[in-house]
Image (cartoon, rainbow, N blue to C red; front, side):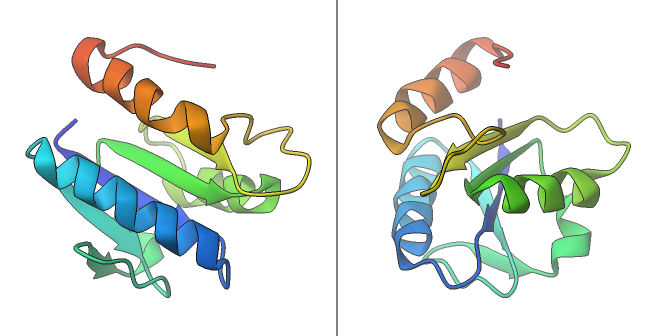
Length: 116
């Protein structure tokens, strides 16, 4: 994946910190990274959320189930994969933990694996 989007739960400092880590990871691998406004993430190009779907190959969602549902609405009918990372709460839809994130991103990037 050469173009990764980030969608963060508003007001979650842990999500912003992890977003910055993802950004550094992606840039080191030659990827471009975008963050949906209003989030401001280090080394990411900030774009309006509704424009994100046209710029990315993968959307990483940092938040909970509500943020994941919002992401699905944003992506709409596009076939862009969405990777949901649980940043608190129960996480029925965002089942990936922060400790699982980077190994999973490596797998997806190298092999194009689909994870459900």
